[in-house]
Length: 503
Ligand SMILES: Cc1cc2nc3c(=O)[nH]c(=O)nc-3n(C[C@H](O)[C@H](O)[C@H](O)COP(=O)(O)OP(=O)(O)OC[C@H]3O[C@@H](n4cnc5c(N)ncnc54)[C@H](O)[C@@H]3O)c2cc1C
Image (cartoon, rainbow, N blue to C red; front, side, top):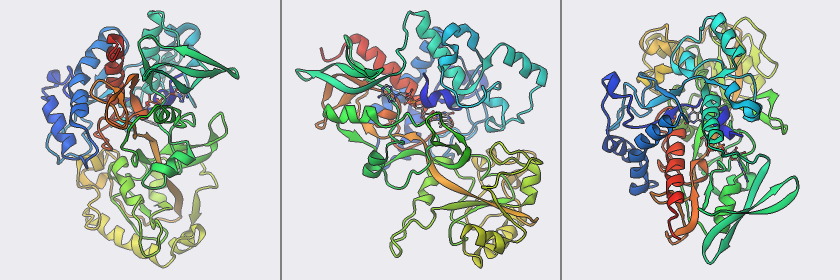
């Protein structure tokens, strides 16, 4: 119960929401629309985008009013493309979940999916939300005793409670595989539970919300623009909803894209079904005393750039070698980094696992990981020179607020992300191209109705979340840029199905 959302940060990006005014911030659907349209490469539909930026406010107040969400604005979290029209460079559109008391869920408490310890902090109390991560241990202890959880657990927990309070019980372990279509109208779905197939009839319509296809090799190869080897989401997102929609004749959009993120495979951490868990790399590549290099031992990007857009650098294609020169990529860091900052959950002062290569010299390190041993020392020298001048002339790292947001906030300006690699031993770890989920799928209209290949609504079929062609195209607008549209389109789909469009 809960999918990727339950293990996510739970941050929700919403334009023009009610809490902005109290912080002296202004916004409007038009500003948000202008922001997206300035980033559009032809994949956005104006009416669908318009539905998101307009309905987001209603969704927020409706779900808040029925206690199904409880969100608080993170005032300083900047939008990711700060120089674009309509961007909120000083933040305001990203919202964090208040802690939720899981004991309120009764027997459902342990059915919400999680992989690892329950988050006892709100995201805005952690470095990911721009804070120190230091919370009084007595407070944390109390939260643990009361089973209060933050992040995506709080988001899903509250939504589930609101359903249970209204007598709506999810059926777990129940997979949908085919839609039932009668006279051109979707009337239900064939599901499988305990090895038995069953037809479920849907009076109001079927809302597909099965997440993306990032764990389906065939679909990834068929559609995506480049490798997605290490998804950060749970392996339950196999594209079943996409296949159901295709079989019902849906037209597709945004299929080459995903909510890309560089990831680090953690071999000792596995999903229940045995797949290696891949962790999004947001902070490690941004902190001082580290750089990303390719097989040639050369830097190829602003390491601190926003994670979703950064995939473009990983997916660069070399026509001469007919290969991706920046895959695999490596994070190289030195002992200054090691003494100050964590790598995933490995804190300074604790031993690193053996899958992190280390060596006394950069040449030796390069040889160990199969990177050009002549280039790597030259690359590091060049970077050190730029870092000491606090001016990355090669990739402009550290020039924007966003670049510095995930950096070392005890250091001012570009020093939050720029720092030389001078102290041995040196370390290296492979960084893969992953995703938080895919974002292409069946196209919808502004009522979340799924459209057929000719652009006509398929009667009785709706969609929301990563299963559909994202209302915001391939653009990850700011923190919460996937859950904001997903919640809003869930809300739109629910209302439209309740009104029973296309009888
Ligand atoms: C580590 C991490 C952190 C993230 N943090 C954020 C964040 O802070 N803010 C943000 O906006 N985004 C974040 N994301 C991305 C976000 O979590 C996803 O984009 C979002 O959860 C997608 O929602 P969804 O409902 O479409 O899919 P999911 O949340 O993945 O849910 C899909 C559900 O469908 C079920 N399902 C699949 N197939 C079937 C089937 N055939 N029949 C029945 N059920 C099926 C799955 O089991 C699952 O429960 C994060 C992702 C990761 C991995």
